[in-house]
Length: 447
Image (cartoon, rainbow, N blue to C red):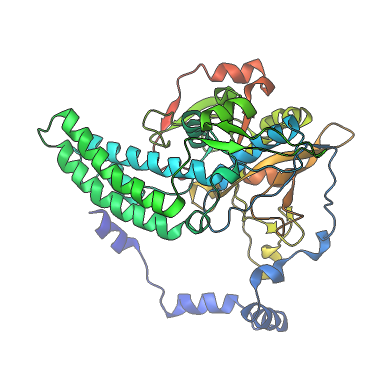
């Protein structure tokens, strides 16, 4: 019925309407010049705004004391690099190190292994639903990936600890994850179908779990061959900035975390600015985790200006924060800036682009695409901030020696998540954590 109504009301583009549209594009000298330029050149380069070049400098009144830029290469592990980069300054300060880096490959191994286990459990849990059920379709469309967020990071660390990069260095597959991820997805989809059959069978729970363990042996094999086996023990020795050499000491990953970091990651809170949902409420994303026993992605939704106040407190206390955003929007990598005025597509094309943040999220035009560590802010005389400093994970040759500077206005428009120690939040915000979370589906436009 709906289809027939649409067919009746819809109108094709006939000759007169087409002519009206054609006539709107005038064959003027200006349009011919624009056509020549745009059709033969990079649109982004042509839209680069000359009027603001050099207007944003890279000086900050307050910065976290951090050294060394990491490189995630061709992988989606920015969330893992970002989480580790928020902890790295603590190690550098504690041991007076000029440089230090955790092993991303170690925690990536366990992230992938645990995500595989979670997928198989959900496949069995939803086995009573048909394959075309939206939840089942979402599950098989997204069996595993190399992306993540703070909750997946924190749960991973709490269970498996940390190791220095020397204990489990990167491999070709950890730096270029696409093929390994493709094969893991292929195998998991095959195993997921089998788990659905097992879930609907009269097999005992013990037998079902053993079947799953047998499947995970294949996943472990793929990961071990691609990334190496994670160490259960390792030796670590360091030389501090004064040249003093430490004892060469044996650690377990959990023991290493407890000694060099020792923080309770449960004290950290995720804040988000998602204008589609009510502010000052707690939200939770169903199934968005990597451990079956872990917590779902949970956050407090706040306006960006509120989040900035807390972020300034953290930076002034020399604590970096996990920060995620839509990095591709208005990024000028050559001068290392994120500024909403970097590119003027409106004037170049003579077409207005006017969606606000809420509309961009709703239409999938914008969402969080990248994580970085928030490490600096520039405070003006009136106490407000006009720019912020981000430690990236694209290597030292990208941006300004590996860092990016974002304007305060860009922060408001394209920031989505920030994770901060709860000691920097006020009592009003902390009380929101005691409320029952609104549960959002995993296929929500933002997640």
